[in-house]
Image (tube, rainbow, N blue to C red; front, side, top):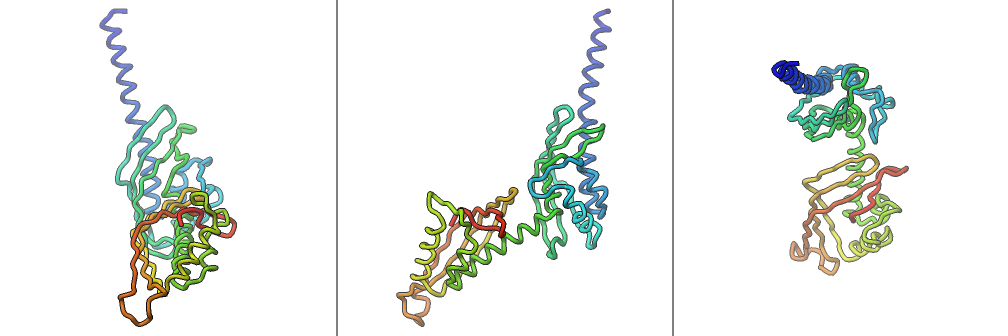
Length: 266
């Protein structure tokens, strides 16, 4: 074979390799666009087709939430969703996509807007690219919104217990397996009881809350402001006896049989 001909074959082979990747990437983008467009159109069947039948999620098995997703997407009002950025890493018939997206609309009875970064795992199975795992959009439609609302209610119950001075109500949201630096729930009970013995007229407010859900575990980062009057202060003395505490806290929660409980961070 002449050198010039061999060089031409080599260039043709290289071109085939290079041109192959954009085509595969476009197929992956097509699947992800299908997922998002189906949400906007209320097309539940199209949305579910973007996922492989073996799709795995730590919270919501695909087979168990198909009906819920179908009902939500096929019921008005329609949702708005779009990809903001994507980064594809592919090796053979497997790919990982870092995608930032937003989802906006009425979910679980409230108007909400989510903007998140997800790490999707995809595979080419039977000649078609499908999502295998990692979809935050799937979780939001499958029930994550309701789960987050349950966590928020637990946190609100803690705040109400602080303001009402109800120790048993406070301990009801603390896991029996609570552990912080070797201290268990009884240490929490003593600490909170000490607060109630020392202060009155407690007011507790939170702000800038960030909630991250991961399977049966959740992490909450939030700022708080606590105002209270020492019991040693005379009632009716105005603002002179008012003390203010302001800080940030990190709470960890665990989903147990009876619901979500705080397991670390108090």
